[in-house]
Length: 171
Image 1 (tube, rainbow, N blue to C red):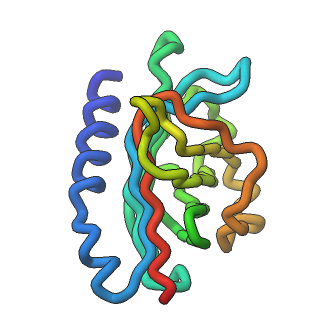
Image 2 (tube, rainbow, N blue to C red; image 1 turned 45 degrees about the vertical axis):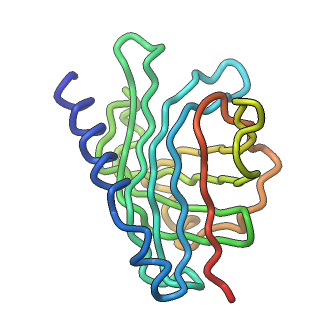
């Protein structure tokens, strides 16, 4: 288990170190974030880290996303490479394929995760204002996830810790 966690952390750190300049140099889009989500009960708080980039319009997406639930025993988490990215203003949607999955849910093998984020600016008086929501899906649902949904998601929740940055490279 510890080995999986270290891989998740190491992979996320490497992904977050990917230069944002590469995406912005070609007018690209990107999202980056690190923190903890604040889902509605009974869902557990998950720590997240991500960096996703694409050219403007979403072509050539790349990056890495990871979530880790440390409240479960044993810990659960998942991570994987970005398959699509759609940015509109301060909102974005990304889809990842699960490359590392220790959620304890065999039905998710070969599946993915859709992430909705909203950048509401810098934290105010130390309190985060950004929002996130993710939806895991099984391999059988890939046909419905070939393209990113529109970024607007009324189900996003304000994060409890951290910051999210969304950059729309559209001129």
